[in-house]
Image 1 (cartoon, one colour):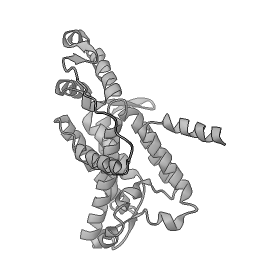
Image 2 (spheres, rainbow, N blue to C red; image 1 turned 90 degrees about the vertical axis):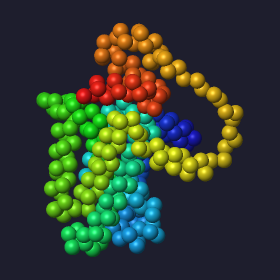
Image 3 (tube, helix red, strand yellow; image 1 turned 90 degrees about the horizontal axis):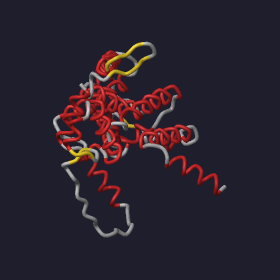
Image 4 (spheres, rainbow, N blue to C red; image 1 turned 30 degrees about the horizontal axis):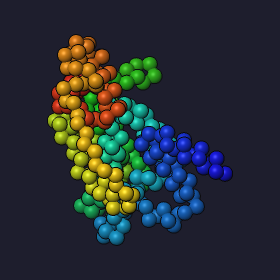
Length: 282
């Protein structure tokens, strides 16, 4: 039994951050069949007065699915987006966009049901990871719109895919799942805004990241070790001098910068490196 638990821990430790979110979604999905009463407390209500006494639902709804097809497509999207996203950006940024997308989708859902009850109805509940997944997808589409991906027998630019999905979500506002499509659009707006600000050098997720770190830190009681001073050498790019780096062709430069991101995270890049990567994405 001990070896089984160790094996499970080992496999979980090898998952990237978005794969761990997939695992959490799957566990909650299985538990929902036997804990219906409890999972009802994870759904996001459209009524603000009910939400006030259950504020955690603006996040927990994004981990709750009752339908197999619903969770299947959400997790497939999340898996493939994770492979692309985490090759370019840090795990922390992925979490920022995922959770902020879920929150933005939930808030737009509640706002529209409150302001336009004659259009969307008086009451509904929201669940599913779609808004958070939309945020990651539209972020990538907006940050590197001309990046092409292979779809069966032809290539498509990311912005084509993003635009088509947003159009479908807008059309969906007039269907049976209006609330879900409102959440999709809320996540998409967050992903778009995040990408556009990042191209200007502004990471709008930093404040949210500090907030989450403070919450996690509140529950940590481990003894802190002595502080270490780390000196970053800004004159080098991925271990190469700027002179050597400038001699590389564009593909080699991209590979060096991506290697630096994988080792130290997106925030370790200089403004010059971020600008080069942004131009290359175009």
